[in-house]
Image (cartoon, rainbow, N blue to C red):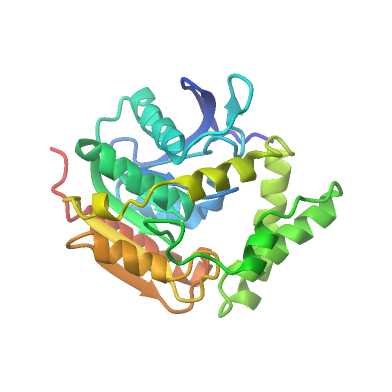
Length: 285
């Protein structure tokens, strides 16, 4: 189910779906989402907020998510491949430098891009992520729910997704977020329509097999922001603490009432922090 805002880029391995919003003349800001998530899992409020602050906001569907399609037969890959796709998208858009923001697995990808493509990264923001999958690792029941296959019935599948959101998401805002969780689960299910049945397993394997980035993060000289919620049960806050400790001079924003989600009451604070971190780098002239 495509949207008029969806665009497509023919990259080396995938035909990537992405959206390009905000100020067309603004500094590019790339939003990379996480495991088994689509570009729509970035709340539109964050996109619009950053766009209103003068940024050109680009968000892709990673390989194995949303409307992005394989060019050949699907195959296993490393986290590096997702990072390569993101950089290829910047190449496709003729963007030399961008602020890079990643959430969860997307945070791991953003870290990797900052490490390997430092001249192309104006600032880095790592949200609810970790330098290595062993730091802040979830409990067994969370992993079990994450890997559970979806039922074939649409309503049952959506209910299972909502139950997962409730398990890993903010507990403080559980009641106020209930309808938003249902709405995004239904939209995500209808948008992807079972395009990537093995995608979550391939993405999870890529994240789990990735080497520890701690030593490489210690070498970064880019303005960096780390955001993490104390209620996160998928990547516990130790992951955010370790990321912040590794990146010299990074700003740390721990959010007590946030889980592994982006709840509505915190969106303005999160967008404001991202923009403030991006502003630490002199503007492109």
